[in-house]
Length: 181
Image (cartoon, rainbow, N blue to C red; front, side, top):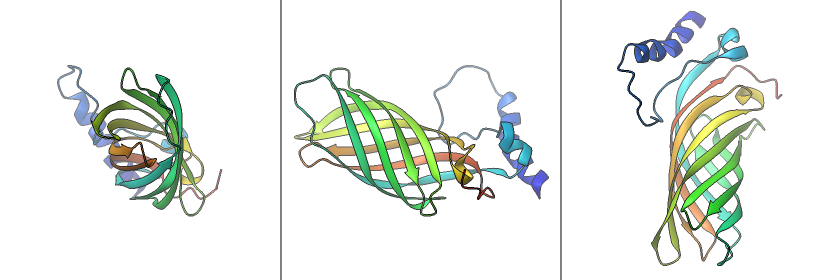
C-alpha cells in the first residue's frame, strides 16, 4: 500500500517531465511529489483541498497606501473540517496587491501554515474583490511537512469588516502523523 501511495504521488511528476518545458502559470490543481522526511516515511499523500471561510477584520484606515490587516474567522475545508483562520495581510491600496501569512487550526489543534500573494480591486461601493494564491508551508502535527497550493477568491466588505472567500487546490501531508509537533 505504501508503494502504491508513493507511486500515485510521483506519477504526476513523471508525466510533467514528458511535457513541453515552456513556462506556464501556476496550476493550483497540479500535484507535486513529496520530499524530505515526509517522503521517507512514505505516508504523504496528495489530496484536493477546497472549502470556504468567513472572516472579520478591523475597519481599514482611509489614507495610507500600505496597511496591515488582521483577519480572524472560521473555515469549512476538506481534510481539516471546521478550522480556525488567523492571519496578517499587507495591502498596498495604490498598487492593488496583497501578501500575507495565514494559519488554519484544525479541531484537534494541528496547524497548517500558509503564505499568500494576490491582487485586490474595487468591485462596488465599499466592496473589494480579491484573488490570491495560498502556498502551504508546513505546520504542526499531520501538517508538519505539508506542501501545496490553493487559489483563493472572495469579496471583502470594507464598511462592515467582513470577508467571504473560497479556496480550491491541493495539499500533500502525512495523515498518519499525530505527534502534535
